[in-house]
Image 1 (cartoon, rainbow, N blue to C red):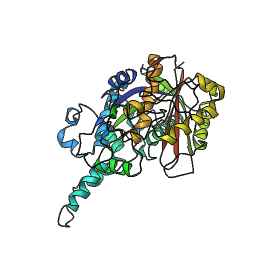
Image 2: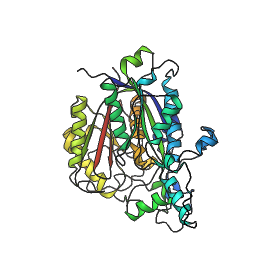
Image 3: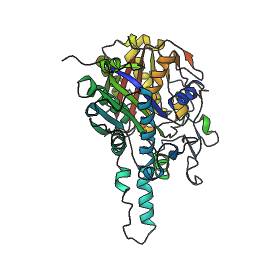
Image 4: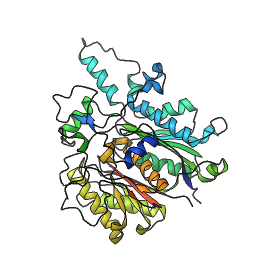
Length: 416
């Protein structure tokens, strides 16, 4: 069976450094940090008092107030990003065959704030179970693609992938394969997350996963830096329209890039820590290259998982050196989490958007906040430190890994 070609025809982004794809891109290439003191709740007793929250975002600018109250923030974010991507794609919603349009979404946690608030309300009461009738449909992780499909009438495959921080990369790979195999003409894919809550921050603090650089939050996310001390939690959403190539060409769609492959693997090692030798990461990148029919030397740019944790950054870069050999030093490697923080289940989507826009504009966003060399990192690797670099990017890879040992990788190329 000949696999169908798959292209990207629409993008949408709602991030801590920009509320549209264009604002997001400007934030990336200018090296903007999205980290700041938390405004959502009193952080006095928390170890970490900052995060990468959305800025100047009012949901009722996009969604009717009554409808928005039926959605957790993660689902609201999904709707906003997906609507931007659909509009960007110029897909004719009156004529497209909606039976062949799917929505495959990623969320690592889902409606955490809703769950938190309902339990707190119950605990503060007299023991009578007075729960909001929308509690369950607001909380469940699969409601985001459900809401997108309901709004637009898309009747193709509809579900959420949950693999922690690899969730939206998993969703994109599933979307790619749905179109490759002829099951869909179009898939709205991506991911969203809204975990900057007392439960989210408290839980990650308890794991010692977060940076505690409270005196300088804007510099706290510092992937590959010798003084990194944990990741910075972010929130938001990213959406991509994947479309069968002939379908896109027939309607004269703008094509951003071709999605040519993906890979999956498991560390099979530890609940939260990466394998120190990067065995699972090596496997996922090799799987991705094989799936795409590429050689290591074909890759120009890698947006790493690069969370700014002491163990994870080193293990990933060692794996890149192992897979790409001497060519590794020719690749523009970066971590946009230095600017956006870690969006958990939405990370793969917004980072895929970053590499696609790097191809379009011929510039690779920087890894900001680097001040101190880590002696455990190969100095010959080009980590695109502190300043964006011009580069004709023909092939770009995006890596995303999650607690539980989940590894996912997607790869894109300039359209021929």
